[in-house]
Length: 171
Image (cartoon, rainbow, N blue to C red; front, top):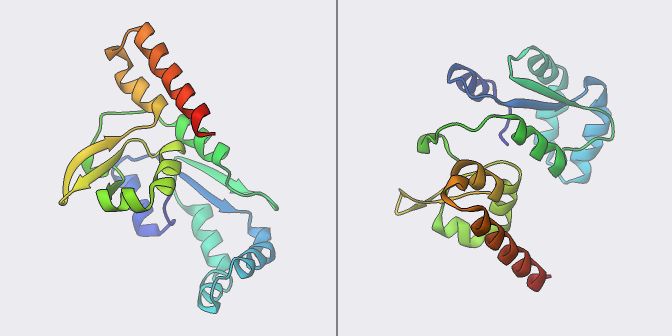
C-alpha cells in the first residue's frame, strides 16, 4: 500500500505496474474529517487533506489506474479486501529492484507488520543484509504458486500438516 502521490502513480503507469487506487467517495468529507480527528491527526494534516478534499478527489477520479476501489460511507479497507485485490493481479518474474524490501533489523523489530504485509499480497518481500539482497519472505500461496512443482503432493501435505500442528501449538 502506498500514498497515492501523482508522481508515484505516474511512475507505476509508465512502468506497466498494475495497481488499484482506493479512495473514499467525494461525499464522505465530513466522515473522513471525523476519522482523522479521532485517530489523532494534526491540524496540519487536516488542513492539507480536508481543505484540499475536492482537489484530491478530482485527482483520484481523473487518474489513470488499473482498477478503482471507491469506499462508501462507513467502509474501511479490510484485510479481506486487500487479499482479494492482491489475488486479482497476475504473478510475474521477480524483479528484485521492484520488491518491497526490509533489513534484517526491521524484520526483527517489526515482524508482525511485515507478516501482515505478506498476508495481504506483498509477497515476496526482499530481506537485505548489509544493503545487499539476502533472503526472500514468501506467503505460502505465493510460494506454492511459484515453487510448488519442486515438491511431491505427499511432501506438500506433510508441510501443511506440520504448519497446522505448529499453529495449534501456538494458539
